[in-house]
Amino acid sequence: MDLRTLVLSQSDLPTKAVTIPEWKDADGKPLILHVRSLTADERDTWEREQLGKKHGTQHIRAGLAAAATIDADGNRIFTDADIERLGGKSGNALDRLFAAVFELNALSQADVDELSKK
Image (cartoon, rainbow, N blue to C red; front, top):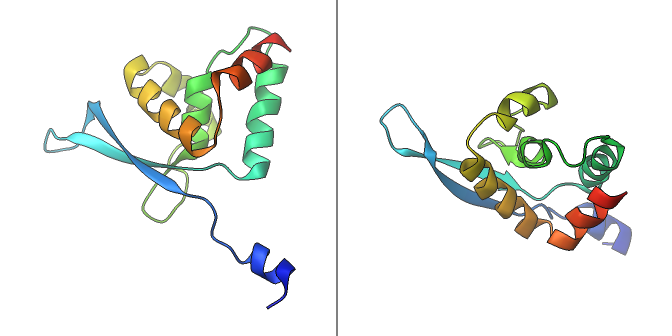
């Protein structure tokens, strides 16, 4: 197998389970959601959106959570249309998702600060 084929055939988007005690399932148990690493295109889009915001980093947590939270088949469970409503949910819950996505994507607070300045 040539190097190009080897690279392009890799499954390289790790996932992580995140327990969200603020959100409950039908039995009253904390929800366990899964987040995955962003693709390069998704990360570029998210960063571009942050740079284009006129009012700082509004919905930064909700936007990143929407982009990375997936179902059992690896499909996003939230759409971009859900971001504003997600922004109205528990800050602690979104912080849990945000932190997991940060870890999976090797993002840092310096990255967020840089986006906020621009």
